[in-house]
Image 1: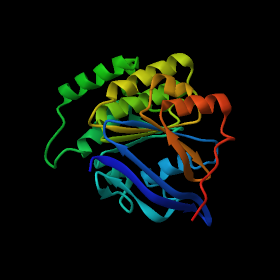
Image 2 (image 1 turned 60 degrees about the horizontal axis):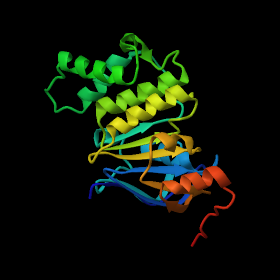
Image 3 (image 1 turned 90 degrees about the vertical axis):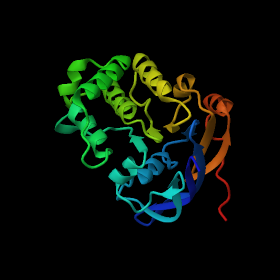
Image 4 (image 1 turned 135 degrees about the vertical axis):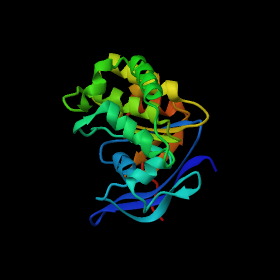
Length: 250
């Protein structure tokens, strides 16, 4: 099955239960959005999919095209086609953007095959130009000294080069001014298509003005409280979250 499926996922940090039975399916070719207040569990969901060691999955599963990714290392999850862009991208001093992305691509190739440098840089420069990233950034360390907008554009550049099967974007709009938001959104929209499924995690409807989702889900207290079309995001913008209540636990 060509879907990212989150099946009845329960997870703790320490002794505190954060996720309380998340059930989602994101088919390839669709963009879904998760919205919710701070503390509802949105970023926790992204971190668990990435394999963050601070969280313990107590039950449920996460499946990429039918294969469970729980219990395998984060780099193996990436090789299977999962890409995660976080709200606060990490700095990697001493590792240039060009070398970082090249190493990630090389790791996905069969043993003994080498990435051809000319083709690699031609593709890299083309995507950098589209995202309005100066080419001199290829020699800068990943995210070191970057503005918020530069960090987010760098992550979309990585996604564009890696061409994942599924992408999870955690608050990609955080810290972006309107011009940077438009550029990043154009980059994401350029990657939409039948071979990729996307999950956007956001507080605000403004991102969804530029990246229009196929489905919107609202998370409350570690659960999906309701789902709908793009009009649900407009309702949240107009009325806030107070009208949404978590489903009763069984």
